[in-house]
Image 1: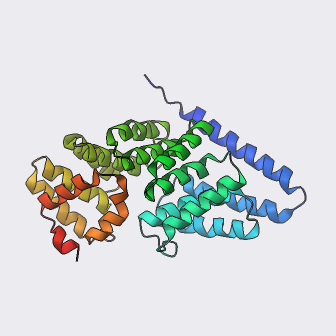
Image 2: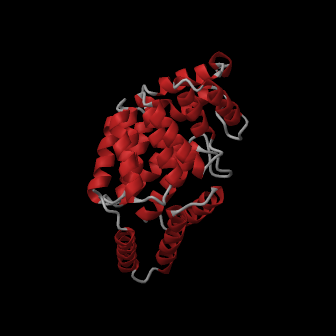
Image 3: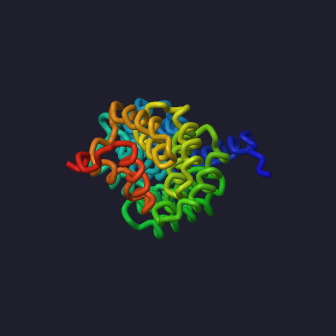
Length: 293
């Protein structure tokens, strides 16, 4: 039985921040610009600890960009930018999302690790970036490095779960996502539950997928990809009317993938299980031939 002690985790986070701040103070040593840049890096990352919406990502991007303009040797700032660009590659963040957001995320993560090889956040962001770019085995190695550096880093387990899915091992991904949720149940809860639901869907466990995706959508009812995944699972499980209703609800939401190309761009990298999602969407009534136009 695993016991989760939030106070212990909070204490570890505080210790890491205090340690990095002390190192920055020692390194700056009379360089006020560097101390100001590190203060901005901290402020930007605080917004990413528990983001409440698009505005937090926009603010974090502006603050962290300013930090690296002032001092481009702060690994912590680059790691934060890697995460912002990662989010911006998955959803539309006005003023931040660009066609090359995925590449910007991987580049920023590599900058962070080059500056500080012990930066766990940089390593797991590299892991996700490699997995999304067709190199999940190398991605898994980076995820493992992040977990070795900080076994309590919940995102390192998300990274490993995504790498497992990209390698066609959704059953292996599920416990990694679940462990991440136990480590930090307050950070990106919806996203972790969505990934659990997608893994169940990819693994052919449609009832479990429906349950996980409904739990995810209870926290964020307007995510089109989660609703599309729910429609697919419902259709594959014989809930035709519910599947059609979910599909229609997803297609009316802003940011919903409107073409097969969009779907493949956003989630096709997640391994061969993605084809089950397409199978379910076809069964729910989505005209994939029309969507491919």
